Length: 165
Image (cartoon, rainbow, N blue to C red):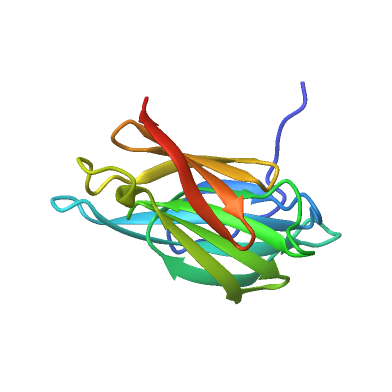
């Protein structure tokens, strides 16, 4: 029986909730994080961190940014205009989309979608998970049972439809 062993450890500022290898350069890894700041109010914070795994299998922190708490992050399966595209779901009900120029996150072009703008009766819904369909569409689940589908129009994404799951 083969035993698993740790190749590398890195102390993060917050709890790690999601991780994703870059499909165009698997030496890059993105980590989504969150931290509960106050139990009573359920206030959270978070961030995303970009790492590079070098040839000796050690991780090096390249860049990180503070955001709302991140529950999911995914790279688009295809590049957009020769740029690597990353989206992450946040507890504040937003999906942030970054057009990356490696190895920087801080200067990435960012779009923001708000799932709370999609319904009249839902407020304060956290964005929980997302999935890409090529680079044309993004679907996102919300904490109150809503599913939102966005479609790309040139350099932006607009709501196509949403429904209660």
